[in-house]
Length: 116
Image 1 (spheres, rainbow, N blue to C red):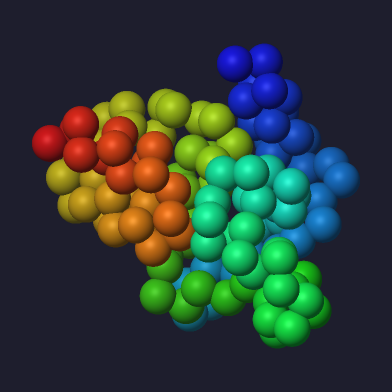
Image 2 (cartoon, one colour):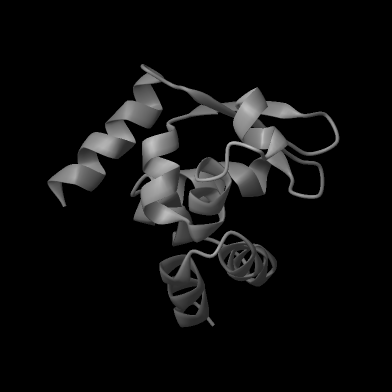
């Protein structure tokens, strides 16, 4: 629990970031920490483990098909914010479930399913 609180604090403070996620067609920018993404997502673990991936070389991942709102919820979940499910509608819950599958975050999939 303490680690998740520290991780969420890192996110909200925006300190020591070393990776950028660009979401949506407008490429809204999210500054994040590779170590946190690596620890919580097999998708990012695979990216960071292969220096030949463009994303690894550039320090940036682009997700034009994920809205900034959705990406914000995904990132907050990865950093330990479980409040993302508070007052969420069925459409966003389904999007989070799909994102959990895409980014290979089983806990996000599981918690999304519990909302239905």
